[in-house]
Length: 290
Image (tube, rainbow, N blue to C red):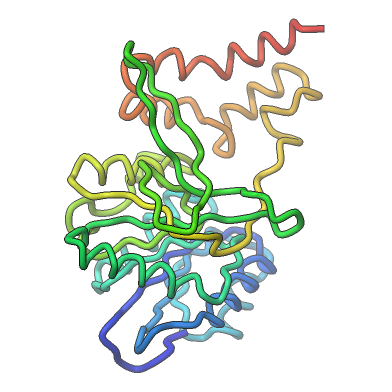
């Protein structure tokens, strides 16, 4: 999917997928329709984590320029993205774009992200991560975007979700749906941390970037569509038995205690043990409540 043979701006698109062939293809089609300023070369690195629904074959037939990396089904999002990111970093690019395969970008998404970074660079802030806000395709409601940290006088850290405005909005972290990372950030922070299996890697990367002297922003406006993950069938589903909720809480798609503990200890202040245990307390309280 190289838009041109050469150009001043080289962008690597970092993706991971597993058994969502229709989503992955729709995402790549939207990526192919991007409106870009000048010469921008897109190189896609897709980690297929052991899909059995023909994803790799379908992508290879429709998008032969996509570099498909094989996984065995055990990598999940963060470790899959880590491998894609590693392959791209080895080649070296001006920009790296995390892109979830269930996110459908609007035609101006990449243009907005690159323009935003160039504006920040002109202001002396070249080491800046820029995230994208997503909206529900059915309702248009805010689904994913930025995160801002608030620390109380007692040291308790609270996270606030940030919806987009008409301008670049400073934040502390961003969801990994569509995130532009310039090479200046990669040189300071490196790759995602593979200690995390599925969740937490995107926020952890942003928080580590802040500690390294980088900044994090949310791009203006909505740049695409992505449905928010439903509660039904997850640990937050109150219709499930308590033991089943705890099992789902400790699964890769849930909190996964080991990964959650590392994330909390790193980034949630001295109250992190309380935050770590709260989901279990929540399940217990909701089970006891009539």
